[in-house]
Length: 123
Image (tube, rainbow, N blue to C red; front, side, top):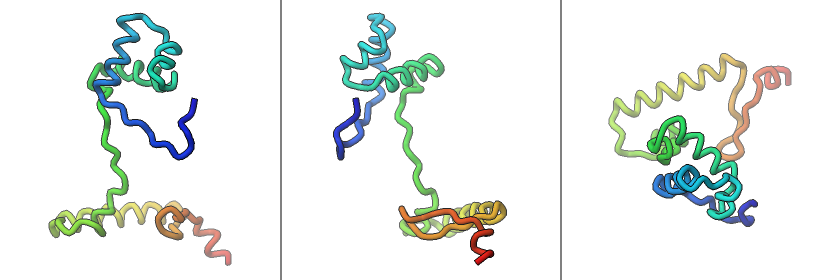
């Protein structure tokens, strides 16, 4: 059961996840049936149940996706000098580690690829 092509991913609130997980425990409904009734995949239900068992209701909170932590260097004008310098230092450390491992970045954005320095030096 996949979503239609071009469809959006649904974001479930913590309350919705908790309601579904509680139905599993309170009504003793199987994961397959519960998933079919709620219109979600069984794997998603299983994942929520597992998280709930390990960490309780708090584990079902939506976590904010971090994204590119260095983008603020280019987009944010409200960074202080210290914040800008610490981000730049982190970016340079990451670049240094990548170079130590023998890789460099070629391209930008979606076209970005990691290229081995061996391949570049042999040409």
